[in-house]
Image (cartoon, rainbow, N blue to C red; front, side, top):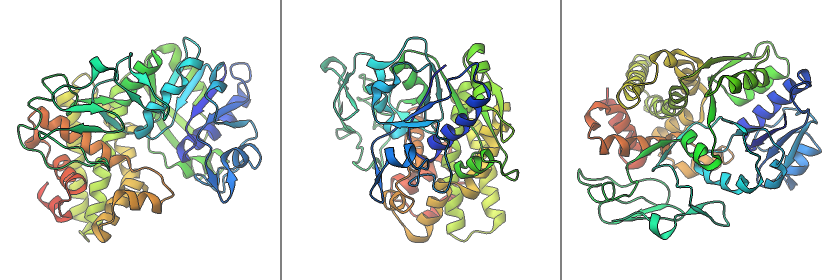
Length: 406
């Protein structure tokens, strides 16, 4: 089976590194060469192609980790024409990039998403037209009625605004009265896997866990002090067997569950809680206070799943994708670091992303989607922490507001 990875960030590169070792041990199942797709970026006057294909190191996103020479970089979508297993490792903000691959894919591909994040809006319609920059626009009959049109960003009339930087202004109770009811998607909420399913016309599996990319990579390179695990949410038994053999190793263990939605939501919602934990530390709160917040935040994650996705299992929260990933995120993750910097310096999301090498902060977009969804469901009072984080990061509220949420 041929394997392709979409995304050359630190996690996409780490997954490629992990798999490049495993395929050599399973030559009867997998082609030894791994294709990894990304835009042709430059770092210190070197192209991504040269970095990965010649120097075998992604110095921009995963420096000082030597990659296998069986990892082959490409920026050509047509290179995926013979791929059997696709791993999607893009930031969720760039999910529409996948439309570029449609003309080149085989039928009956296996898809694995490692994306942590959710998306605002309904699943994109099949008849969406692909445009040159990798995004899609709706045909005339699919343009949102009564107040929104999909181009680069959603734009709304007086009943709600979506700012250019991805943040939103404070809404009133009747903000969605026309847009939502008349067919627009403002306030609706969907999972990344749902979008991938629609784009690729397949069922998507998902991998989440307590995974700091560099730590996983060091473990793969043989450092016994760096063992990691992940949770595989799968849709088909046949997919589970193939993906398990592709991903698991002595350095990276896999647990499997059919609660695919629970796995994906845990991996997304924890970023919201990590933002707030960073704020508590940036404000100088005691450890007692920060842990008090953390426990309440974890319970709010649990309540969100129980309220809006009752088919999910509460046990998933105690897998690597749940409490373990949350703990890693509030100690080492970029969302935690941004929350702390926000409280200490009042730095913007864009400025902080530049500081960390243009890696994306997933928590802000996620809390914006979650807030809008909870608002439309008229359950704001049941999720005070999510609402408080939204006010701080999306509505320019003071960081001290977090102390009123728990």
